[in-house]
Figure 1 (tube, rainbow, N blue to C red):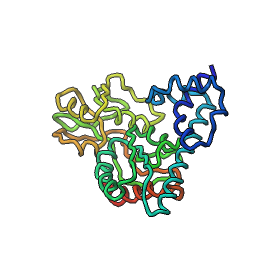
Figure 2 (cartoon, rainbow, N blue to C red):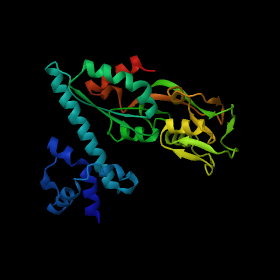
Figure 3 (tube, helix red, strand yellow):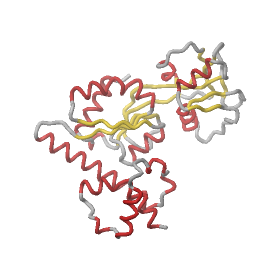
Figure 4 (cartoon, rainbow, N blue to C red):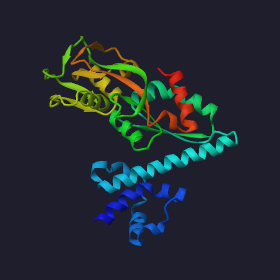
Length: 277
């Protein structure tokens, strides 16, 4: 029923609403809040609810709640700044590559300079990271182009290369029917960058981690296609080849608006830009 759908959606935002006291419980019926209380113990329930499964009004409520949480965090930081303290939360949505190459070096420096600021890191695929910024679930994102209208600053450029245990393979994704080994991020990057082009992944083996993909190829399970930067971050002795059609992509820092960032988020952004890859 609509009541249950509203309850599922509001379960995600109940804490935010209660914390900032912008909406009183009386705005919703007792039955609705009873349903919310019943399912609220499933702490990560919202992670398995896909946006296309929630009706339109529920999506709008969820986005507005995230905006409210974002505003609360910025107001809190502004008040803290008046007392010459830096506090609050910085939420970052990042692709695994950027976490490994950039954030792993930036975060310790940030924590040392601003010990009272909490960092929340969400690793996601390229499209997922962008949607987290779009829906106000993250203050900063690091993801690949295209940027869906978000403001961005390029951090580095990457490309997809082929990998093989013994030889250089010039891989044609449109015509070759090889046993292709992909990690999840590589698969999603290829499909996003070549959107609208039909690619046959029937004979492909898709694993979660890039390290697993590299080990699979190293042990003779076929040819792989992977981010060149990700490949360089994991020790290996694989042979690199070219991929056709060429897939090159910028990896950028993305935000809603560079002029509307919280103070803590701006400090994090400056460190990322200064100490980027």
